[in-house]
Length: 427
Image (cartoon, rainbow, N blue to C red; front, side, top):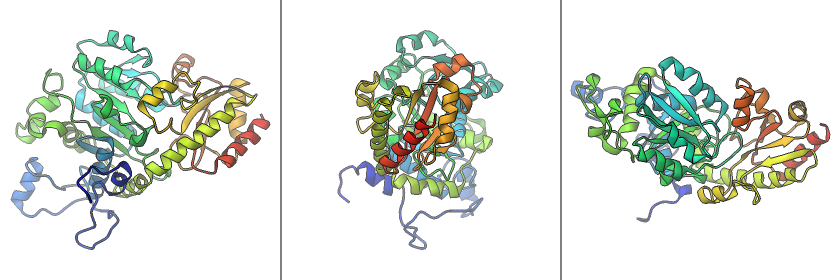
């Protein structure tokens, strides 16, 4: 290979992987084992003391998982990464590393419904407080920051509406106040958006979605951008103060620009335990190899479908940033020139009841709570994923009663449109 930086598609196939040195197997093996043999007592002591890198126990690290982590870090332009059992597990590990009881963080209100629930309810058990903001009103974010604010969290594009958020403007506010910006990049994948290049310090993924791409495996990922100074303020003691369980080691001092990924592994994953299985890591690795091909087809199909829906007399509105007259189109072109992604929403004449009837009439589309599959998917958020939210929260999250969310697959686009037509005819 030449000395030039490999392209995205090359990294998606090769980053982190080598033929197995023992067998010559070209595919990354599934290391289906709980634990690993030490060379001797000194080797074991070095591993447990973080003085050497290596495998101890699959809850903490596994060779199949390690290839997946290195590959996603390369695709995102990060310094290191950590895989977890799910996207929610990844978010838990991130906040565990930066929050103490009584601390708060600011989160966009345009967000996956499960994250709204996790932040607004489950995190209260840790006394981690969320402050909601409208990410499109950047000026209002700064007003929410105080001396106990530890991060800003956004999703771009936002689920379910596919709205692109001004990552750089929000990163500038975060850094002005000495706090990191965390971006959930699930909806875009690094093929469309690389948040670290726009100022994000940490990136999280539900790999269950576009990265895996086939709806067959769960996984989450944390990518360390290596850009944030965890020691500057004293507000992140898990990274900046001596760790008694590791003989007084200071993680940021020792591991530098990949210290956050290390902290999530050796302090969070080790003790909280949401480890990804080797089998799921293998399946996700297989999905990553076709990520650029799939994402471009998703985008091309979605644009055709959105254009068709926009002209249908039973559709009141379509929110898809790929449409040239969409108010979010310019922001999309800035952050995602390859396309606006696969997921968007539209509003049906007839509201809540029409949305339920439409979903039930579809045949090619699968009605389920997921996105990012090769297959086209549909859901009516107000009656499913966002049902636990109040009407006001539903509206602010872009999941009002008339909203239908589509995740456009990679089938022949004429068949996708044909299925939508017959379902609309029956509403």
